[in-house]
Image 1: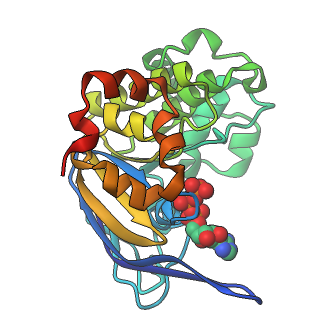
Image 2: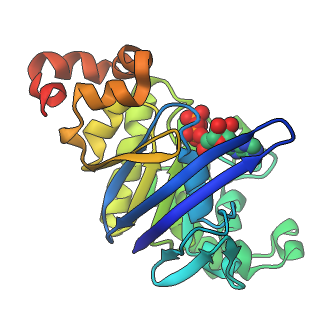
Length: 277
Ligand SMILES: Nc1ncnc2c1ncn2[C@@H]1O[C@H](COP(=O)(O)OP(=O)(O)OP(=O)(O)O)[C@@H](O)[C@H]1O
Ligand SMILES: [Mg+2]
C-alpha cells in the first residue's frame, strides 16, 4: 500500500543545513494502523508531507509509492501527483477547515480535484455529492451540524469534519499529522478512537504522527520512530521499551509518557508494557 524507499531530505538555509530525513525506508500494508513517533524536529511532518507529495525529497532518494502509483522518485514528483494525492486523506493538527464555510461545504471540498475553483467557491454541488457528504457526516456523528459555520465547532468536532472530508474522497490511505495534539486528553482519546475505528471499518491504512506515546500504545499496533531524521524503531508498539523511549525523547520521556492519564493507570496495571526488551 505504501512504500518509502531511502527517503532523504536536507533543508539548506543560508546559515545551516538541516538533515530532516536520512535513509528512511518503510513499507506499510493495507489496513495497518501505524504510529509515527519521535521528538520534536525528528522529521515526522517532513515524512508525511513527502508521502503526500507536498515535500520533494533529495535527488538521491528512491521512490515513494502509494497503491502502486509513484508519487515521487529521485526528488521529482510525478506528473499526476495531484491525482494520486486526491486518493490520500490527510488530517492535520490545525484541522484545515475553512472557518467561514459551513460544515457540509468543508466536507465537499474533499471532492476538490474533481471540481474547478469556481464550482467550489460558488458551492455548485450536485444532490448526489451533497448526499455523499451528509452520509460521511452521519458516519462521524456530525450530520446535525451540516449547515453550521465551521468556526463555531469545538476542536474535536472540527477533527470529525476533517475525517468526513477524507471519507468523501474515497481515500485508501489516511495520513494524519498530530491529529489530536491540540485536544484535551478526553477529546484526544475520543477523536483517536473515531479515526482508528473508521479506518478499520473502511479498510483504510492509517499512518499517524503522535505526540503522546500512551495514545500510540492504545490505538496503534505498529510504531515507526524517527530520531533526528533516521529510522530507529519499526515494530510492535508493545515492544517499545523504556530504553528506546529514552533514546527517542531524551529527558522529555517522563513528560511524554505522563502526557495522557492512560499511562498512569496502565503503568500500574501493566508494567511490562514499558519494561519489555
Ligand atoms: N521548510 C523548512 N525549512 C527549513 N527547515 C525545515 C523545514 N521544514 C522542516 N524543517 C526542519 O526539519 C526538521 C524536521 O522537521 P519536522 O517538521 O519534520 O519535525 P517533526 O518531527 O514533525 O517535529 P514536531 O514534533 O515539532 O512537529 C526540523 O529540524 C525542522 O526545523
Ligand atoms: Mg510535525
